[in-house]
Length: 244
Image 1: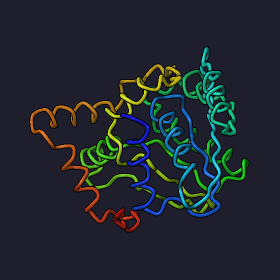
Image 2 (image 1 turned 180 degrees about the horizontal axis):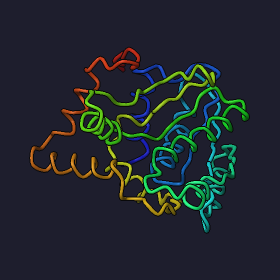
Image 3 (image 1 turned 30 degrees about the vertical axis):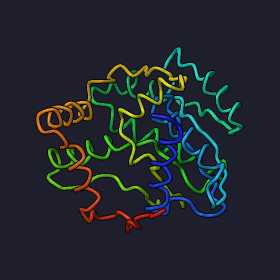
Image 4 (image 1 turned 180 degrees about the vertical axis):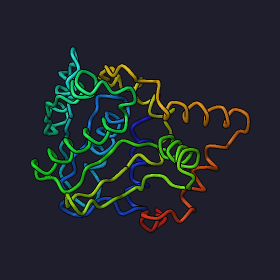
């Protein structure tokens, strides 16, 4: 996927779900993975021509794993002229050394988001962008059906009233396969995950299930995504199809 295609998908999401307003200061949460780095490129590119002017910053929550090196990301942000902050935490130590969690994903996500949102507010941002793509949305819906018994997935835009902060997901129309292609084409400085349970999660199970269904019945993932968009899911904002 070329940058122009990425910007087109991003513009579609931003416009159809009114994700950006004039004067916004948006923080990109950068884990170091391919998705968040692609999102950084997407919003940096969009910023150059989008009619509503906004500022951009980047934040990484360092979970405290040894040998996690974010220097290449710092260099990239400097090249893009995007302010970058690394928030040091002891989340890994708390999860694995102190609590000895065997299923840490939910607690880790909660702690990580808490640290991220607090840092976002300290930087004066009113919005934070998460790098969830189309596959994430479909997989979350499937997990909700299987383990919760309800048809649900996270919203393109969510206002957190306790934090006075809005979460946006500008890559919701981007396929993971295209993110992988973008990563290779632009040689993104991906930081390998140090989590000891990486790849052994319910989400990985959902990813493999969607892949299998899509292989057996071509187009399944797209039909699932369409069902989500048309599903009137509680908490989702009204969609305004954009015609250019």
